[in-house]
Amino acid sequence: MIRKLFIMAALLILASAAKGQEPNADVKHGKVRSFFGYVGRHVKESFTDCKTDKLWCGYVIGVGLINAADTGETIVGMHRGFRETSPLFGPHPSTLRLVSESAGITVAHFTTMHMLRELFTDKCKSDAADPNSMYSRIAAKRGISTDPRRCTEAIDLLGWTAQPRHVAAIVGNINELTR
Image 1: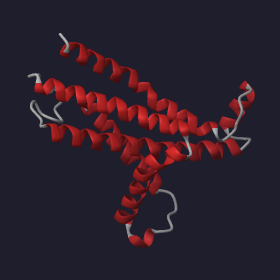
Image 2 (image 1 turned 60 degrees about the vertical axis):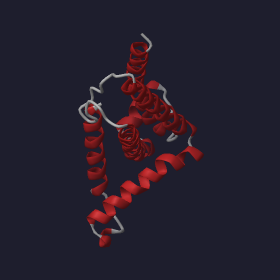
Image 3 (image 1 turned 180 degrees about the horizontal axis):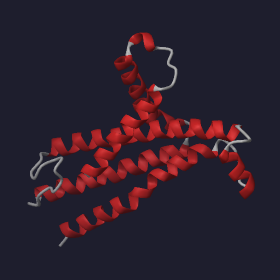
């Protein structure tokens, strides 16, 4: 859990640093205000993109449900006398602390994934438009379409790669609770 938090923080910093190198029209407002505007836009779009992108919506709902299940089974275990082993929460966190911190971590996760998704999609679309790019040459050699819509699918599917391990941990915890 703490490893995921550090990875998300590093990705958030890298995504914002990469975005900070692009020309920005609102530099007059200052770097801090521009940074918070950028992050705030992604927090909002992490949830509003469900209207237009069903794959992203499935990712948000699926990961949200998995994180809610993890938090729920942790709360049940705490009420049955188990101890929390995460150094982030401490051995006996309150229900409010567990729910609020888990929700914050989940929103940070979605925001970071949305930032990476935008950066990857922008790069992918520019490469797909350039017939001399490595992406276009490899796609042509393998007979793969360079349709820019394919760009967003890759990052959405990449986000699911860590979820089987998370689900297995939840199932293991539930089995421990039912003994």
